[in-house]
Length: 128
Image 1 (spheres, rainbow, N blue to C red):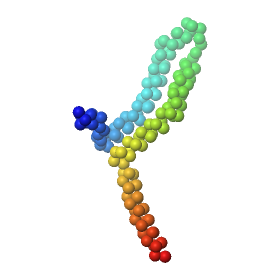
Image 2 (tube, rainbow, N blue to C red):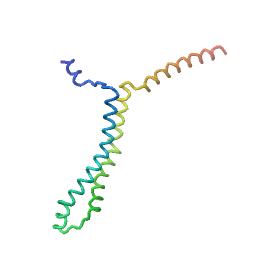
Image 3 (cartoon, rainbow, N blue to C red):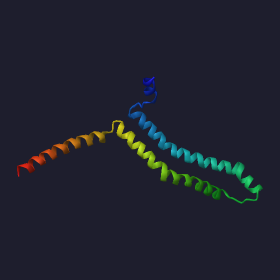
Image 4 (cartoon, rainbow, N blue to C red):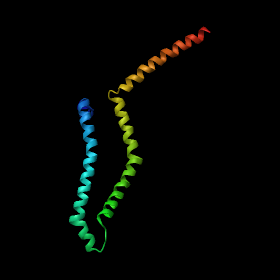
């Protein structure tokens, strides 16, 4: 049972190619989402909302509507920036450190070199 749990919950490194594809797809999705939002706003305003606003005596032109939507998006963006992003980066740093990070190897080599330099320095100081 424990082996099955580890197999299901354990992480696997599928290689750098999968990471590149996932990273590029994630970055492109930002722009795709922006285009979809603009098209959805335009469609919703022209087909449904402008008529509803007019029938209720509310005068909101498209640019005012777009501004309201923009403000509605900016509020959670500020919350993400303030609270979610630091947590995300902390988690990302931990994952990067765990999974074959070349910097981790470099730091280990520098630590060994530093220990040797300290030992030589102590020997030189003892000779004085």
